[in-house]
View 1 (spheres, one colour):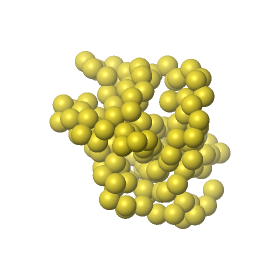
View 2 (cartoon, helix red, strand yellow):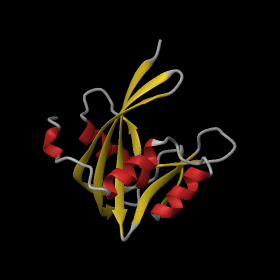
View 3 (cartoon, one colour):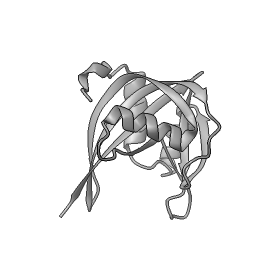
View 4 (cartoon, one colour):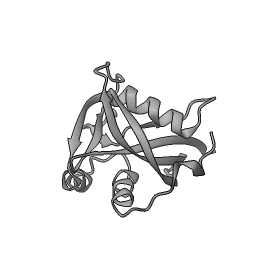
Length: 145
């Protein structure tokens, strides 16, 4: 039986570059993702993504838009992933989650190149960036936490 995992992810842009995390996933090489993670019991998606961004990047951000809900299937899991757009506000300098190898500010072309090399955590990584750039988003008040 497939389990449903509820997650949140965030597109964060600064000067034409996007904040990405490089993760250790137990494979032959690291993978790249937007800051993202599971929504914990008692949390809503906005609170969860603010927490995850801080834990994975040491950045405090301001959420500006909601990208929507993506449903993504793997052979044994289904993900309901909430996407957000944010702007960086303050670098905190706190330690990163242990599975984060490094953070990077990458251009869209660098992210696309990682996708061609099969180094993105999921197809949603590039889709979120493209949706954000195309203005396919919603006001945050469509979510009621």
